[in-house]
Image (cartoon, rainbow, N blue to C red; front, side, top):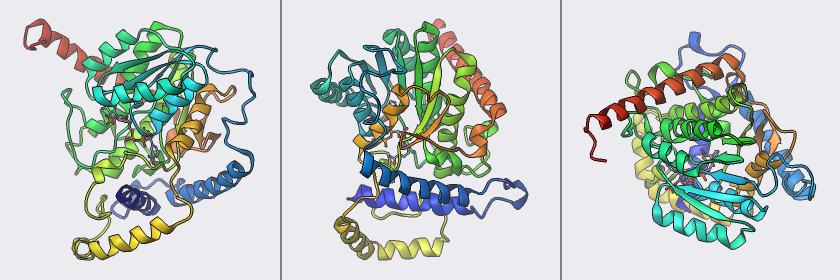
Length: 383
Ligand SMILES: NC(=O)c1ccc[n+]([C@@H]2O[C@H](COP(=O)([O-])OP(=O)(O)OC[C@H]3O[C@@H](n4cnc5c(N)ncnc54)[C@H](OP(=O)(O)O)[C@@H]3O)[C@@H](O)[C@H]2O)c1
């Protein structure tokens, strides 16, 4: 339940924050893009889709049985982040469709459990790959061990609330959500055979302050760390990555917002009360929230607990909407929400920004790996 509250607070904060993040100088505000109306429009569409889903079933159930698929029958699909949340259910859905699945995760115990759960519904093989996307060397080795794939679902994700650097000296969220996936996907694409890639993004891609990436300060050395901005930047990167992929490789790519899902994504927000994670409130109000927390929390628990319908999707429903992006023909290049093509923010449809992100990612990763390899060759590493 606490996760629910935290998630609600986060989503509310996102939506409120997006309507107008007051600290942005007016001159820097995008003139043509209003985050408020973008999110209002998406909310209206979400409501309409929820009605359609209730009446006609979800998009996956509407695919023609035995009809054409973007991934060949019996193909091999790699799913990152498949030890929990949306990714675990993506792996289960993909396995039940009759594909071989490579379940990916960083934690050995969670991986074992996930493989067992996926195995229960699998019609073909289930393999596992253990690696941490926050490590370029682990990710590179995993790509080599996996070898080849017909489909990729890049679903792993995190939402750090504090600034943390990885062993590669990169901001943790950006590396886990984007750079690690870039390395994994490009290595598997180099091996050949990949027909479609799904980059699991978020509607939060439209939440960046200026509707663009801040690649010149990707390590947050010149700005105070802002968790919402940082997460939104990584999700914008996910959409732009999928946009640029078919220009660099002969592959179809889709990005997908799974919806607001009851998952572990908000685990770092694990505090007594849905706080003010993005610093939107003045400090005095923040302090009062602390005092009110117990009462407010039990009140909210009562309200949320008695609500007949959760505002959050179940991971399984979200996963089915992501799997549509993997298998449905005719979706190449789309950004999906609830499994249906949806408009992105203008910044996410910017070809120049997509190309710039690609080149920056390529050189950032290559430089970091070259340094590691050099240090290893000099014997500076123990392994
Ligand atoms: N939940 C939402 O409302 C929502 C909304 C929009 C978009 N999304 C996106 O949906 C995707 C799935 O998120 P979720 O909601 O299912 O969250 P989740 O339950 O927290 O699952 C995230 C998965 O990613 C894995 N992961 C995180 N960091 C990793 C790393 N460094 N290396 C390898 N694996 C890592 C996690 O593994 P561990 O368990 O080992 O940490 C877990 O399996 C994410 O890309 C997220 O941004 C979610």
